[in-house]
Image (cartoon, rainbow, N blue to C red; front, side, top):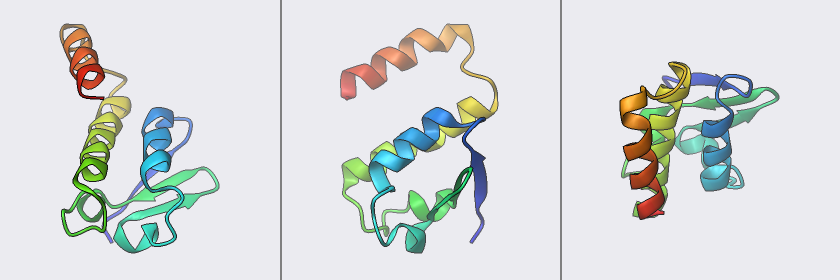
Length: 93
């Protein structure tokens, strides 16, 4: 497993989305998600693989979560992208 640890202080929004999609699944650890006391261990390759036992919309939500982790890890989106990203996510959700 090539996992990344996401700490709740650094990735609160990503962790919220991950928990909503896979947090209650008993098999989540088998395909790349393991909650910890302070966040979660995530293997993005396994978690977002189309071989994972998720619906295509669930996989899409996890791909969004991966994007959120990248953005949160860098302190947010640049101003020129904030509005359009927010609008697109709002439109498709």
